[in-house]
Length: 176
Image 1: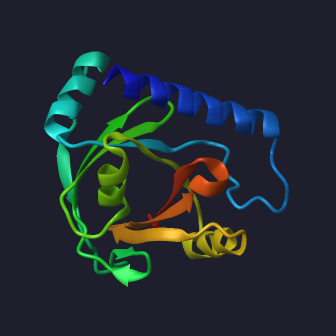
Image 2 (image 1 turned 60 degrees about the vertical axis):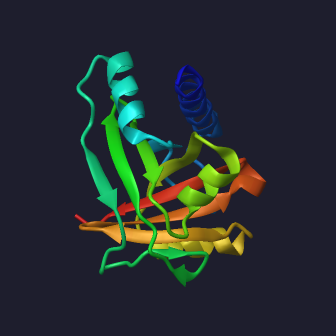
């Protein structure tokens, strides 16, 4: 748990510093926001981990919700329909959100990560506008979209930038 907390703090700091020193970016920037929205951790037991986070932060354990396909943007994994499900918990900090993800099966980047790596940081997220356009920009740079889906009022995409950036990126678009 301490290792994951340290990794989140270091990851958020390094990414924020990189964007700070990069300036405002070029006109060719794929992600124009210079603010990390979220860091997500894949876990085996969300109840145990959310309680541990609450203890460390001195807060109540965050509620748990279920992520599953949504009619507005059904879940796709590697271009195919997926019945992926996960339990989620969100911890809002002053400067970013920590998302805890416990895969519940089905084909997904969540389950693949857990199977291949065990628990750990899964992605760094950024808020975007025109999510499908941003996905296409990444694909033009040789960085594929690995999973997409939605929820009431928004959409997400996981971009597998691990080969070029060392991590998965999540794009979040809120329609409201």
